[in-house]
Image (cartoon, rainbow, N blue to C red; front, side, top):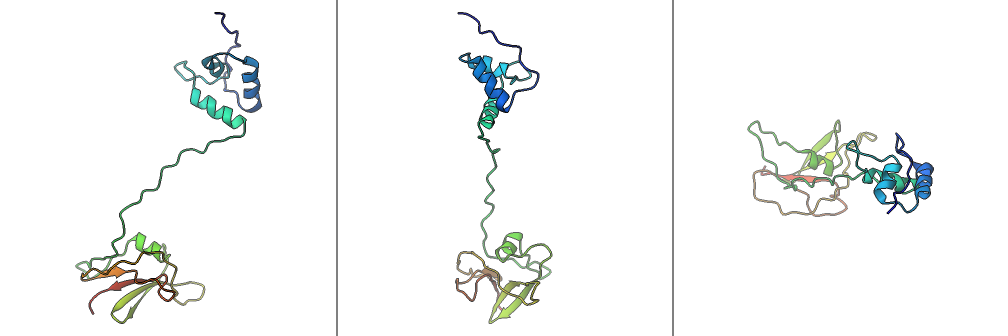
Length: 166
């Protein structure tokens, strides 16, 4: 078996057209010789296959996106809120995002026939208007205070109802 004559490895890894030309020049050499000859060497002297293959794909116009972590699902919404000792009802960010409210937004609370309706105020018109909400309909549990997205209809779209005995 004869050794394949190779030039010393470049100090920086080859990319683009230079990488493709070097691969073509080397020809049918073993893959570790090709990787090292193109400058893809780890600190311990072994071939850096992953970096080489990514550069080879990029040279052909196929760039890989870095892996992304899937978003955590989080705890499902219960549509219930507990009244604190001070008589306050804390509403979390997930509920605010259902009506499109964010930091600095104002929410109006209306009392309509035994239910409280939360609405995000629209700044442009200075009137409160419901914001679309894709919350599933859920039964109202028998609790001192709870939130119910209600039946989905055109009139209730974007509203969260807090039911409490009054």
